[in-house]
Structure formats: C-alpha cells, structure tokens
Length: 41
Image 1 (tube, one colour):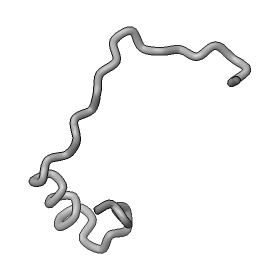
Image 2 (cartoon, helix red, strand yellow):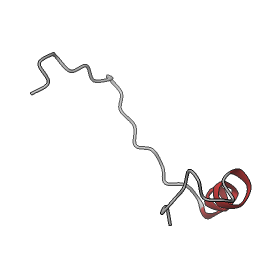
Image 3 (tube, one colour):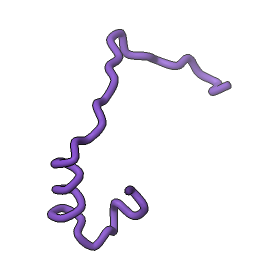
C-alpha cells in the first residue's frame, strides 16, 4: 500500500543485459577501482 495511485507507463520495455564488451568498458575504463561496481561480477 503506497497511499497514492501508482502511475505506470503505457508502453513498458525490458532493458537488455549489458554485453561482455560493455561490461569490460565499465570495469576497465569507467570504474577501474571498483568504486561504483563493487561486487557486480
């Protein structure tokens, strides 16, 4: 129970999982020290 009416988008989509290439970029280039991706793989 939220106490208010929930709003839901008319067209919901599923987000695709990241690819190995994207994951490599995230780990090695964007977060090489693991600050944001701690425990993510």
